[in-house]
Amino acid sequence: MLRRKSLVGLVAGVALAAVVTVAVAAEGDASRGLKGSPLGRLISGCIGRMMVLRSELNLSDQQREEIGKILKSHRQEIVKQAEAVWKKRVALREAVLKPGTDEKEIRRAASEMGQEIGDAAVLAAKLRGEIAPVLNDEQRQLVQKRLSENVEAVEKFFAKASKAE
Image (tube, rainbow, N blue to C red; front, side, top):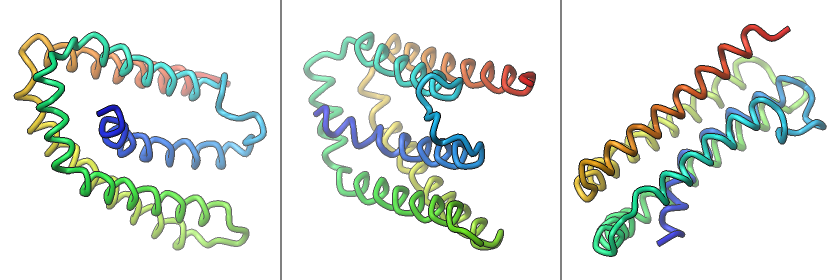
């Protein structure tokens, strides 16, 4: 079941990885890497909060089984969509890093990736709609709380980044 959960996380993670790749390439300091950077700490914090959430949900065996069935029934869709986002991410990265790439080529690649991310978001919403009823009210509130914490962390990151010199 962890593998199936990882696939769902991959859909969101691939989208985030694309943004990170473009940000690092644009910054021009890829040698420093992401670890220890403000963006790296933000990403680590968001992932950490989601890992804590996973343990805090205290899913029953029945809930785990039901969620597993839902994810298994959509496995092919999830894999197909994750792969599509990944391929468009690679195409965008290559367009950005290619010497002499024109702006139209980069924008086309970004637009195509955006379309795949949109499709992944629609799939995530569909999965959420099927999984949410499996959770009890307390668990759904906890999920919402952790998502809000992630939003706050990102907002703080951008507020601080905009003031940095």
